[in-house]
Length: 202
Length: 203
Image (cartoon, rainbow over all chains, first blue to last red):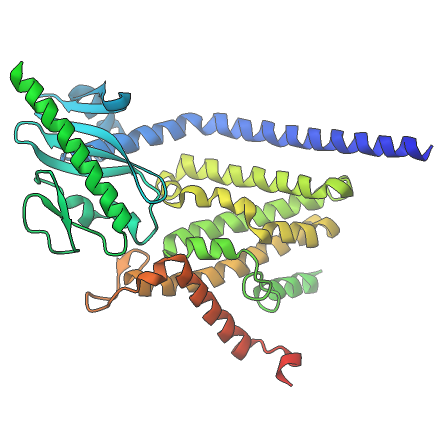
């Protein structure tokens, strides 16, 4: 008899755990489905804003204007490793998406070039997990803005000391991140140069 | 009843404070206190999860088989944390991007598990809600104080606005995890030495 009770208690445990898991998973699935379109839309808007920021163009204020501007002026093609590349109508600006190895994880950036002059139009980081307050300062304005109008290959100098076209300010205390950024911009500069040569030979 | 609520709230804010007395939730104290803004969002998330998981555990306390109660509480906590994560992604995408993996780490915050295990399993839903809420607030204000000083000394800013001019040499250590250890230790030292003196230690 006692043995039977034990078995019953065990079965009750399994059933209880199973049903409570089931209930919570169903609830979460509904919330997920309900917000899914919103989440994907937020991500798309974020990417679009980042592309325009990188191209140094005016970012429309409303989400609708941003969508309209994009569908009229921007073409997205599969670039390096089939991650997207953006080109603009009546403009020689190209935005590349590129990955690099940061200190804690992958750094994914948008890097823009004016393919006529080979100068960078800007850089923006769309994914990074660098140390907050140190490496993560790459996302701050002063760091991103310093690349506009510059031309690689790049070298870095201590904070606040860059004065030529091919230098950028490093981040004090974040050497690994700074090196990663140097690799990213130099890699993408080489890609852009090759692309530029190819277009001119055609 | 009112008396009990006051007593629990006061205890969680002071004498039994989860951070500086029970020394729980230290991992997140180190991780998110380098910038004030992240701390606020993290704390709101934690208050929400602690309060609701306490209520849920309390409602189910008579049904939950004792031997698997930890599994059940973890399951409940995890569900609420995922809920917070989804809501942030959908409605506050910028904050969500900044916090990154930290939201998911609320699951591992010992305060929530501790309150569910020590309080909600033996008490009625409403009083468990009060307990979860006040534990969360006890955690929040300690973190805010730490974050304020870390951001000020480490980046010279408060809530992202520059307060200390260029004359201030930023303390890089303050924005890294070790800085939080120092800050927390100083905080505990001050609180325990000045405000709540343990009668046995004083003598």
